[in-house]
Image (cartoon, rainbow, N blue to C red; front, top):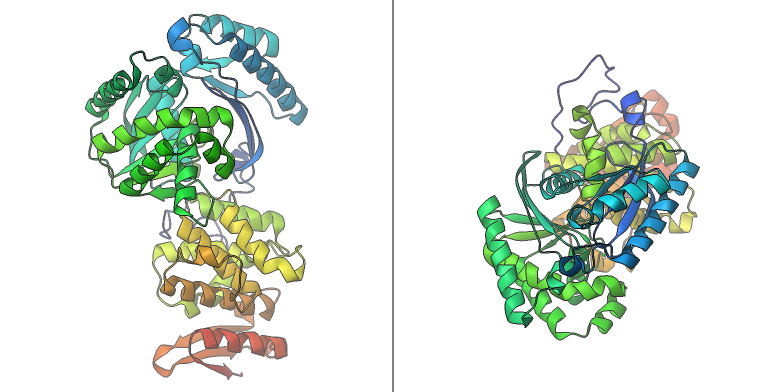
Length: 518
């Protein structure tokens, strides 16, 4: 996404229209998606998610998972695991009751490899509907790949490359680019399947190589990026963070270089799994599958030769939500929509963020579309932690952004917005407990975040309505001056604290503060 405006649809006021379009909070079709419940019955886990909030970038209102192991042993018996079946059915009964209590309407339920491949899959499907009222839509591998790819597009609109979704009994690949899903293929490379391979490590590696060769023939090689979807992949990404001492423990959009990831796979193979569990908080059931997933990942890297491997927290469940979105909603920037919604729900003066951004834009100079959207997002969020004690607002802002469920946002971009918001409440960042994360930014980005933060700090307290009605800012680089041209109403508003904050902003720009009176 960038700051280029889409063609306006319908008639909107000049105040409403800008580079990111008209807000959608009052649109009936957007409100209809404000709370959607989905259930994913997989080979390893059964999960219910209820999405809520901004329709284009929803929050997880409710999220519950049971590691049922429904597909464990399927390759050997051809049937669902009896204990897994009981646990899955129990979870589904509970999910149906929880959804009823939330009054969210019917749940959208999908079942994947275990139920579609098991001989007693149809009987289980009938039992679920009979005992819980939930209808399981059993989807094939190609559809599973498509939905997973759509889930990645929900949170990663510019994604281009290959989606790799690993479940318990299958692994799907799908091409993605320009907002479209291309070639898709499924395989039996799930860890539960691989557990049943006879003949030791040699036969196991031969099976993996054979399956991946077929996948490569189906979807082609030469994709620059592979997007990893699934719990086993996320566990490996978390281990990669641990080995590298990575400062930001957010898995979504965590990006790995193949060579470094291969070193992590070597480390996993040589390290006790119990020790790895303790260090990362990974469940025993998940960690048991990691060595097999690591073997598959090693072969994926060898065959497909990607330049980058990215971890996606979004998959089939988010794909089901994306499926229900009208096209005009899909086109929106998820970051901007989420930040708008946060301002609408949490700020003291909803709507002020855009006015603040317009006021401080001259200070920031010529910026790229990517920078523009980050600046706008920060302005939307600048006041959303006002209820926090003043001594902790700077930290709360940084924490909220770097750990929030935001998408279409790289890790350095998270830190950039967080640092700008820290400076919105605090001049100095020296001694901050967040300093290790600042290393994700270049010195120029750190300076830019500081300037943005100090600009918001001044503009936010200059006036409580519209800063542009009180004055305008102009940066004169040749004269090294930051000029504030006050209007008659602005003269009364420009008090002692305003002067201090304006001077602080000029200092960060290495400019002389100049005030022009009417």
